[in-house]
Structure formats: C-alpha cells, structure tokens
Image 1 (tube, one colour):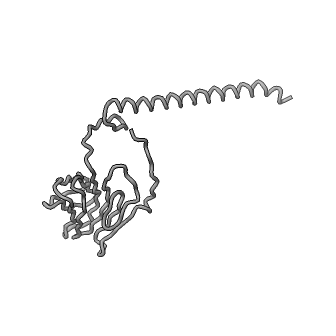
Image 2 (cartoon, one colour):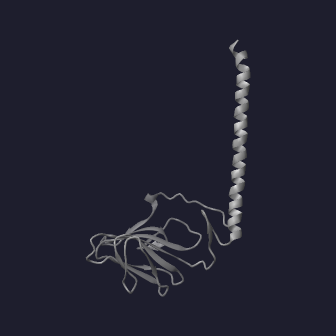
Image 3 (cartoon, helix red, strand yellow):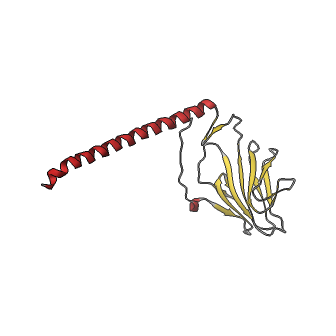
Amino acid sequence: MIAPRYQEIPSAQIPVAQTKDGSVTVRVIAGKALGAKAVIETRTPIIYLHFTLQAGASSVQSVPKKYNAFTYVLDGSGLFGTEQERGEDEQMVIFAPDGEKVAIANPADATQPLDLLLIAGVPLNRPVVRYGPFVMNTEAEILQAIGGISRVTFQMDNVQMNHAQLMRSIELIRMQMSPLLND
C-alpha cells in the first residue's frame, strides 16, 4: 500500500481559465485545460475539471486516448460527444474511448449555464473491494486496514483508560491531603 498524502490547496489557488469571450470557464483541479495547469500533484495522471458553459457555448477538451472519461452534470442540460448525447442535472455521461478529445456544449436555447465535472484517467484494470470507508484491491488488504484501525483504537482506549486512572488517583490524593492543607 502507498502511504497517504495530503495537499492543502485553498480554493483560491485552484487555477481558473476562461475563453476569450468568457462563455466557458474551467477550474483546473487536476490536469490541464484552456492553457491552465493544475497545482495539485496526483500519483496517477488524471483530469478533473469543473466547467461552466454559458448558453450557446461549447468546448473540446483533450483527453489522452488511453484514458476513460466521463462527465457529471451538476446543473443544467448539455450535449456531449460527437453524437451530441443529452445529459441532464445529476446525470453521468460516459464518453466512448475512441478518440483524444471530448466535446461538451450548452445549447443556444439553454435557459441557464451548464455546470459539470469532467473526469478522466487511465483505467486501473484491477479488482476493487470496498468495505465501509475502505477501498482496496483485495479482501486481505481490507482486513489489514481494519486490523490497523483496531490496533490504533485499542491503543487509544488504553491511553484513555490510563488517563482516567491517573485522574482518579490525583482526586484521591487531593481528598486525602485536603484536611492537611486546611490546617
């Protein structure tokens, strides 16, 4: 397993790019779009973009041929891919892995902006096993993760128990000494 790693990137530091006419805006969380590059480092190369397209706007995003790509529509209704398939609020649209670009568009007659996430990456082609908050490749890895949490919890319980015993001991000493201190 790989050790976990955290990157503190405030929202204000996420690069934002826009077309010259302002009809397409993208927040570049991972990858590249409209000339902007993400500041987040990923172990596995991915694309994670938050697009907003005004009515009548369209965009074509480069996606390496070996990537799988999908979009999740946050708000609005759009047209996706070369077939101009429609995607609505809270729907996922999966792009065919047959090219190196994906097309997204907000129809000219749209009554609101199209807000979506475009996510793409190299397929892992590995089994996925999940249990509770854990996602691993095998059941043995899940059991190992649960065992690690159990050990930490047991250690924390011991620390808390020792702390409680210490606090009781201090209270007993205070009670025994209070008559002596009051004299």
